[in-house]
Image 1 (cartoon, rainbow, N blue to C red):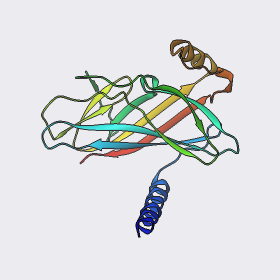
Image 2: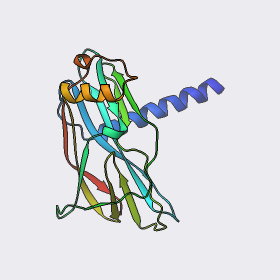
Image 3: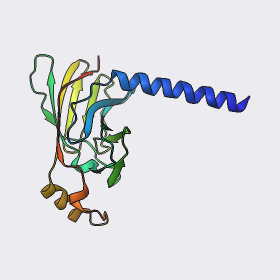
Length: 191
């Protein structure tokens, strides 16, 4: 009976993941990787709500892709309201978290999800406010709809710089994925 329950839960989880994957808006392949953004929202009835952007990557090649990732160099974000006006950054209240630098191997057909934020969080007691944390900035958002633009560029030169900085990662920059991921107007609804 226990194995039937586990099998049933496994099937339900696979169906959920497949349905979730079908709803994602993937980019065109960039050097073998498709990308999309999702948002993990931590709601609170007392404190400010927190939005964590997450980058999803899918290998559409027949070969493994070696991808450098670091939460402190996790791309650039621009947030606009529904009238396409820029939302201004706000100073962060607190930033913390793990070092989070590594080389990931993405197998053919595999989808991985990585944090595109550095674990900052808000301290205000305002349940109608949402903090959107990224690796370099923080935005305060009111309950509304927004569009998020995201860009991540890895060149041989900047990968070599990162690997020199994160010296414990032993990897040849020439074996790592390079390219520019650009995602435009990803909808974010926090109404």
